[in-house]
Length: 425
Length: 143
Ligand SMILES: Nc1ncnc2c1ncn2[C@@H]1O[C@H](COP(=O)(O)OP(=O)(O)OP(=O)(O)O)[C@@H](O)[C@H]1O
Ligand code: SF4
Ligand code: SF4
Ligand SMILES: [Mg+2]
Image 1 (cartoon, each protein chain N blue to C red):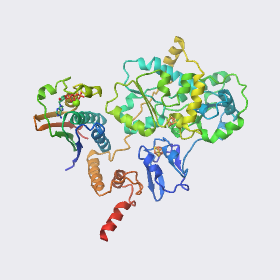
Image 2: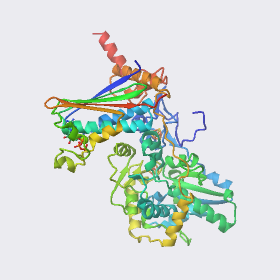
Image 3: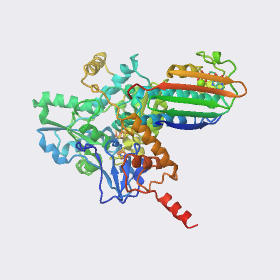
Image 4: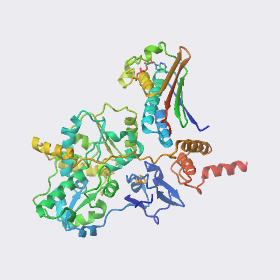
C-alpha cells in the first residue's frame, strides 16, 4: 500500500450494494465487503477482471486512458488487440476496421500481428528446441496469469517463457520504425493499445519482466467501439491487413498451441481452471507436457472483460478470416533476426519475475505459526458455510482476517443466529 | 508449544481426491511463510506418500506438524503392509498393476523420491498390520 494505485480495476462505490457476488469469483481472495461496500486489497489483485464480469450492478470498472491523451504526442500509433477482428460482422473487412480506427485520430495503425508473428516463430523454431528449458513451458502473454503465478505458484516462475508479449514487441518495432521513417524522436511518439482487458492496462503501468513498457496508454475496446463503428465505411489504405493465419489464432483459447504446431500441449482458459492445472504442474505431474497455454479469460482473449462480442461469436468470425489465409513461412535470415532480437534482450524479459508472498500470515515463522493456531481455533467455531455474508470470501478467510486484525467489526451472522436459537430453547 | 498440526484421512482407491491433502499442506506452508525450496520438497514427499496410500494401502492418515525448526510428516496406514521394504525402496521397483501404470503411476520412484526430499526418513512395515513412514525436513536455521 502507500504506493500509487496502479491497478486498472476499481470500484464505483455509489453503485456497489455489497451483494458479495464478486467475493467468490476473485481467484486471489482480494475482495472484502466492509461497511456494505466491496473493497479490493491492492497487493492481492491480479487485475483479471473476473469481478467486473460478474458484478450485476456494474460497480466494478476499468480505469483506462482517455482518448484526449493522444494529443500529448507529435505522432501517434494505435495497436488494436487481435481480438478486434472478432468484434464486427464478417462483411466488414479487416482493412476497413483498421481504417476506421485510424480515423479516430491516429497517424498510423499497426497490427499486433507483428509481435505475435515474431513471438510464435521464436517459440516454435528456437525456444521449444532448446534443451535447457523447464518443461512444461508456460506462455507469458496473459499478464493476469503471470501475476497469479507470482502470488500462488512461485515455483513455476522458471517455466514462464521469457519472451515479451506480442504487444510489447509490436510497440517496440512500431516506435523504432516510425522514428526512423518520420524522423522524429522516440519520446514524441505515442503508442496506444486498444485493449480487451484490464490485466494488460496494468501491465503498461506496472510491467512484469521489463523495466518500462513501450506502450504509452490503453483505451478500452468497449469504450471506443462506438467511435470505430461511426468511422467504418472505406478502405483505401495500402499498408493494412497484414495479419497472418497464426497470429489470428493467438487470441483464441487453444490458438497459441495451434499456431505453434505443438501436439503435446494443454490449452487452459478461465482463471479458475488455470489454477487447477497449475496446481497439478506444481506437483510435478505434468513434466511430460511441452507447453501450457494459459488464459485468464474463458475462451482466451476474445473472452476479455472489455470486449463487445461474446467469445463464441468473436471466435467464429476470427476463424473465418484465418481460414482464408496461408500459413506463414519465414526465411532463415528472418528467423535469425528474430533470434538476435531475443538474444540481445530487445524482446526478452530481462527483469526477474519476483515471487510475491502476499498470502503469508506473518514474516516471522514463530508468529505465523501462532497466528495459524489461532486461525484453526477460530475456524472450529465457525459454521463452514462460506456464505460470504461476513464480508470475507470464506470462513477461513474470515478467521485469517480476524487474526491479521483486518476486520474488527465484521460478525458471523450464522453463528450469532445459532447462538440466539440455542438461548431460546 | 509453538507447533501446529494437521491430519488428513486418505481413502483407498480414492483417485478423485488423490493429491488434495498434499495441495492443502502446500497452501498451509506457504501461508506460514516457509522457504519455497522446502515447500517444494515437502509437497513432493507428501504427494508421493498420499498416492501410495491411495494405490497400495487399505487407507490411512497423513499427519503433518510444523514447528519453527522443522516439519514432520507421518503417514500411517491400516495395511496390507510391505513384504520386503528394502526391495520397495529400490528405484524402479513397483508392484503396480498395468492399469495403474497406464494412469501414469507405478514407476517405482515414490519411496526413493520421498527419501531424497526428506532430511530424515524412516519406514516401518508389518504385514497384515500396516506401514508407517516418518519424514522430517529441517527449516533453515535462524528462520
Ligand atoms: N503404503 C503402502 N502399503 C503397501 N505397499 C506399499 C505402500 N507404499 C509402497 N508400497 C509398495 O512399495 C512399492 C514401491 O513404492 P513406490 O512409491 O516407490 O513406487 P510405486 O508407487 O509403485 O510407483 P510410483 O510411486 O513411481 O508411482 C509399491 O509398488 C508397493 O508395492
Ligand atoms: S480483478 Fe480479479 S484479482 Fe482483482 S479484485 Fe477483481 S477478481 Fe480479484
Ligand atoms: S486472457 Fe487475454 S484478455 Fe484475458 S486477461 Fe489474459 S491477456 Fe487479458
Ligand atoms: Mg508410489
